[in-house]
Every structure is written in C-alpha cells, then in structure tokens.
Image (cartoon, rainbow over all chains, first blue to last red; front, top):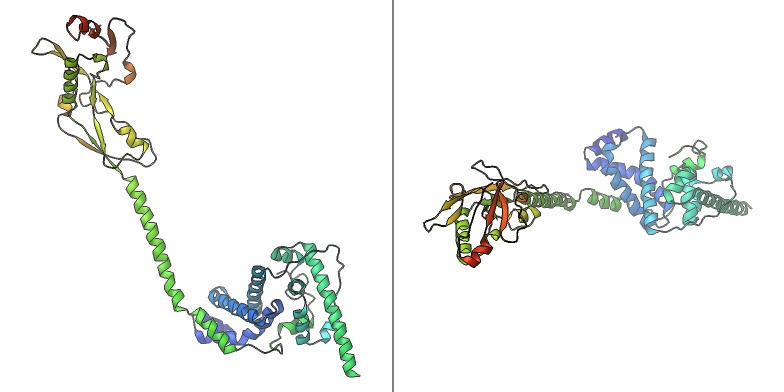
Length: 183
Length: 227
C-alpha cells in the first residue's frame, strides 16, 4: 500500500493504517529524537508523543511525497525534544562572544558512516549538540535558533563553533584510530 | 525553517536522515505501538470530554440564572390610604397642640414596598417616597378649620405597582397625580422668618399659622390667609 493511501485511511481513523505508518517511520524518528536527547528512554517517550500529535493532527496534513512527510514528522519530533529540554532546563548556555567560525571538514564527515557521525553528535554536550543539530542538520539560521532557545545570536554562534571544534577532534581521533587499525 | 545553509547539503546529512538503526539496543516496536494505540484510543479521555463541557455548561446556566433574577427584581409599590393617616396625624397634632409647621399637611404618604430586600441604591431611595397633593380647607363640626387632603379618592383603594428595576440604571421617579393638579416641588415650600407666626407658601398662596399665639390664648389653631 502506498503512503498516500495510508495517510488517507489514517485520516479516516484506520488503526491498521496508523500502525503501518508508525512501523515505517518510528525508527528514523527515534534517531532524530536521540540526536537531541541522550537518554534512550526519554527519546522513546518523545517519539511516541510526536507520533501522538501527528495522528491527532493528520487531518491537516496534505501528502506531497515521502520527503514532505519526513520533514513534517521531523519537525514535530524536534519541537517535542526542544520542549522537553526547555522543561528540564537541561542546558544553560553561557555565551562567549567573539568565538571564531570554524568550518567543518565536510570531506572527512562524508567519509564517515552515518552511524559514526550519529555517535559523535550524541557525545557532544547538550548545548553544543542542540545548536549543531538545529544549524547544521535542520538548516535553521542563528536568528531562528536564538529565538527558539532564548539565547543571543552570538551565543548560538559560539556554541556552534565549539561543537564543530569538538567534532573535528573526534574526527581526527577517528581517522588516527582508522590508520592504526590499517597498520 | 530557513534554507540558507540547507543548499549545501552534503551526503553525511542525507545519510544521517536515512539512518534507521543506530547499532544500539533498539526499542520494542510492538510495545511502543501498544502504548501509542492506548493513548490514541483511550476511552477514558473520550468520556471526560462531555463531562467537562457539561460542567462548564451548568456553571454558565447558573450564572445566567443568577444574573436574570437580579435583573428582574420586582418592586411592589403600594398606595396606602394616606389621607386617613394624614387626618389621624393632624388630629393627633391638633390635640397635642404641636406646631403644624412640622406636619406635612400637603404630603400624602406612599409606602413603597419592595419584594426583595433593599439591596441597591434605587431600592433604598424608593422607600418612603413622598408624593404631593393639594389639600382643601373645611370647617368641622366643632367650628374649627381642618386641612383635608384631597387624595382621598385617589388612595382609598390599595394600588399595586410592579416595576422592573434595571441593574445599573437610575430609576425614574414617577409622580402619581390622578387629579391632574400641578405637582409642587419641595423647594416651593419656603418658610418666612417671622418671629410671631410661622408662614409658608403653598400653591403660590401664603399660609400663616398662629400656633405660637394659640398656645397662649387658646384661640384657633389655624388661620389661613390667601394672597
């Protein structure tokens, strides 16, 4: 059954269609939640909250391909995670103005597997991780991030550059580790 | 979300988006679905919905009823046979030889009875409202002159007037004057500074009384002169 039909049936309240959609997308959404929240249990709860909202508001969704569905679901999940982080007051970001802009070694990242990148991101401190996820992966601007997290744009920039610096170190370690393994 | 830096999408981002399995101990899909299904089709939640609205509706109805009862507060205005009372009063005053200046000879008393206790300013004002009427002068059997109020035909029967009070509006004072005589406003009574007798104006007529003299000489209580 195609996703468009599944969405139609889910709109009509079909439990089978809802389950099918959940089975198709839950793992990818779990990865999204885990990028923001370190605890697997919390991430699972947030993923379920996200799907709950998705099915409750599915009538307002118009299917325009799988990419649109993925983006819609991801947006819900990211919002859930940010709400969770804000509620828990997990991260208190201290701004450090004048942080230099560090560019990521994109080639080095491209050589890594998705799973390796995921593990590196999860290891970042919560403040760095959140800003990195929002800027580099969700594609938000510093202005949007600053309003979303109630921080200044400068703080957002400094958090991002620190996250990148930490990731560079991890990538270099990974490369060194790989070389050692090759020898 | 802004796409400012989204154009430079590299493979690692796409790879990350398509990542299904993180290699960690994956969660139980069936268990997670059961949780979600239970939340989506929770019967208790569906039952709560009408009760909530039912409670809200009942509160609203109570408020509306309370407001409407306050709005339609009825005021019963009863006309007592005021002339009889007035006559009694004049007789009492005559026998007690009290100065008639204190007697409201030209005022018929109207008792305003409210069905509800006087809560508002308007009710309080309505109580003991006085309505003016013109008196007439007659000689009684004993040769004394009496002031008889002309409102006898007006107020011998008990009249009930029901008025609806608006909540926050000033109540209009209605003068009941079935005889059609001009209504005399209270400021028209003007007492003159007279050491020997008290005089006042009534219906543009100067009215004198010699109560101070009569106390000494036991003469007529009332002497009325017209202009």
